[in-house]
Image 1 (cartoon, rainbow, N blue to C red):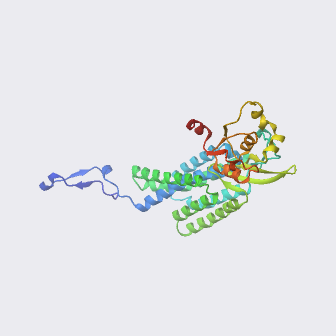
Image 2 (image 1 turned 90 degrees about the vertical axis):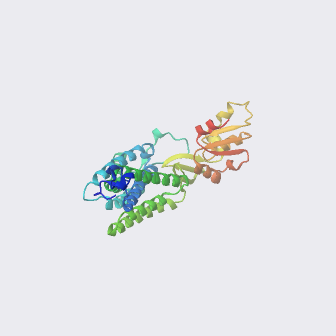
Image 3 (image 1 turned 45 degrees about the vertical axis):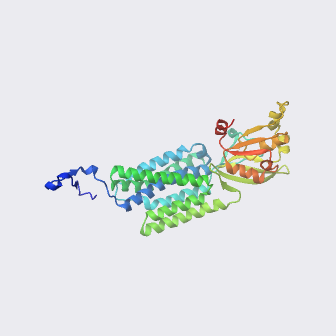
Length: 362
């Protein structure tokens, strides 16, 4: 109903007598402008999608954020609040946000903060140093830029709220938020690379803006997508539902090995089980200390790329349940582990959280 109409006349049994009764204005069903509803849904979806994408992507390229992801979340909250405040002003930040986002993504990609493995031995994080810009410079800049980026879609949502009744606005805001969350969750589950996220964000910004602002947003979005495309096609780079994974084939001590890092942190090394047992004998201690165990059934939680599975097979295991939460790392083990443990008929793979597996298994 238009803003100027305060009541609605509905006939009842007294109509025959020429009388009618009226509903209060706050009870009258609203017929909202569906252009406003469309912008609200897009703005809410973009806000949640972008927040999750930044938490995940920045954490994969700046090692500090892998362990302090709430840092990006707090920046997002600040930006959302600022966006709602800006919605009350005659000026707009939204046309500038695609450019700010492109600067954030390109700068982070060109100057990542990672941990480099110096050798092929077990690593201890207290003895490692990071590469890239210092934390005192990187973290404040990321915080400010994340807040500026999230203020854009929040501004769209805030302006739409002002044009709708509160309950109507909240309803469509919730629907848009769920669309954004579910869309990103689905892409993560399907192991979609970062370039797909960038394309989605660019398209939504293009739809939300108009005239020259739309084309400026498209140019900034294409620059960002180009950067993410380079990341995506880099040899050895892939995405699991949890990590950005980098796989590198190396030769150390004249012997081949495969180094796996996740989110810029050394994670696992794949090499032949016999070589691992010779250089790192602690991996064989469980079998030395249970000499009477026939190894009829072995459970390995956190099986990863299959190194422990290969060792158990070499010790005579008759059957192994290999459990790991990350399907992509298990795929890498299936493809590249030199002992091919996941191809052995004695091994059953389970993609599951370790605790969940124990709770559901007898």
